Amino acid sequence: MESESPKEKIKDLIVDVGPQEVSIALMENHRLIELNKESSQGHSFCVGDVYLGKVKKLLPSLNAAFVDIGDEKEAFVHYLDLGLYFRGFDEFVKRINPNTDHKGMYSHIKVEKPLPKEGRIEEVLTVGQMIIVQIVKEPISTKGSRLTAEISLAGRNIVLLPFADKVSVSQKISSREEKRRLELLVKNILPKNYGAIIRTAAEGKSSAVLDAELMSLVEKWEGSWAKLARSKTVQQLFTEYSKTTTILRDLLNDTFSNIYVNDDNVYEECRKYISLISPEQEKIVKLYKEKEPIFDHFEVLRQIKSSFGKVVPIKQGAYLVIEHTGALHVVDVNSGTRSKNKEQEQNTFDVNCYAAEEIARQMRLRDMGGIVIVDFIDMESAEHRNALHKYMQELMEGDRAKHNVLPLTKFGLMQITRQRVRPATEIETQEVCPVCHGTGKIASSLVIDEAIERSLAYYVSEKKMERLTLKVGPILGAYLTRGMFSSIYTRWKRKYKCKLNIVEDSSFTVLQYEFYDEKGARLD
Image 1 (cartoon, one colour):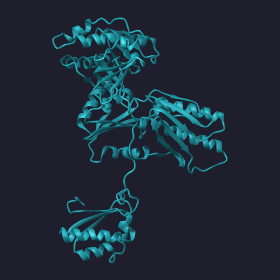
Image 2 (cartoon, rainbow, N blue to C red):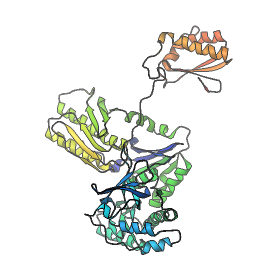
Image 3 (cartoon, rainbow, N blue to C red):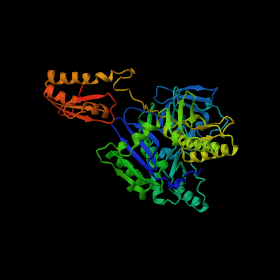
Image 4 (cartoon, one colour):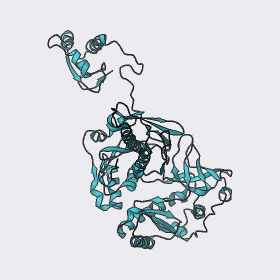
């Protein structure tokens, strides 16, 4: 089976801005691939955020330290994550105050020789010391955030490195001339005491685009200095871009066709960001103004409901069963009702390939991290097992998270490790039954008309309502209106001398019903 070329994939980004959170859906060929949620209320600890933290405890046995960054759980930093140029950041924190010339002081700090790789944490940090740190892994389960003191500010084309004082170019840029051009260009515009990594996306970009992006990153870093100078207490210095712009930064390329946003402010934020990193693509950002919810219009909600359950259907009757434990994720591949044929081995290989496609999608969609064990259907052919392993590696190439796919064992198990930087996304797809309210028992269907009539009598006699709407499911609606002149519905209208309108709703369960007043308000 051949994997689809990335060039053939059309990407759409759907941004749903709600009062509580911002939901971001990445679609490839109208199929949901990634789902991100960003809370618009309260405080969260996200990858890329930079803090001034306080060293709470040294762990010499682990060569690490616990750091307070304002979270309930203390964050963790290892000696090797302090970075080569930690002494520069340390001196900067100690010397900065409201009365200093911040830029002048920063540029004159001499970056001493890098920290030795074999050094000890107690030789560098002391309890109570204030240090600048950046989150590289969000709090997961009982563990606090994982930190680094090697601060970096990532842009679309350039990663800015304070105190690094070096420029490196992505190895994926093959042209020596282009590498040389980019290196000289960035070196010429970098202020003193800054380094940079030139990303693959910078290939072919003009000096104006790179200069504008670099200056915006420098402004972001230097914009935090005033806050740091005023108060050297535990605090957030600055946050990464919002998840919307972070996804644009990492994924935006020529295959992006549309970015739909249903909020004016976020629309403007996206438009300005794209005009900075890729001016020619500014027109793909579009403001969604329709009355229908944006996730309903693009069928995102339907795909969420069908993709986040324990059982996930795949092609031709086959399905996956996904279980999550504290240590790992387990995926079981089942052939289901798929018809058997003479080519049983080929049939099994086909089902496993379909499963591999869905598993690769599910790992990105749920942001599954750590160890993932996949129990594929057993195949006798070594050639097919090798082909399935290669196919899974190809499918995972588009995944931004670091990962490793191991070959199948003789028992048909495949082990996949995937970088875990935040908790896996879990969405409850099951709903409590509105009829039985979770008890598993409902009133007898033989007396449902009596139950509805009692409610109708109450609203007409006690509440003195003359106009009512009864909303029911199609089956119950057909039962109540059966017979033109002798239907239950007609009898009720004559008996209670009221105007009753029956509306059928396909989303209602068999015996579910609701009454509404003449203004459309639901009645309890």
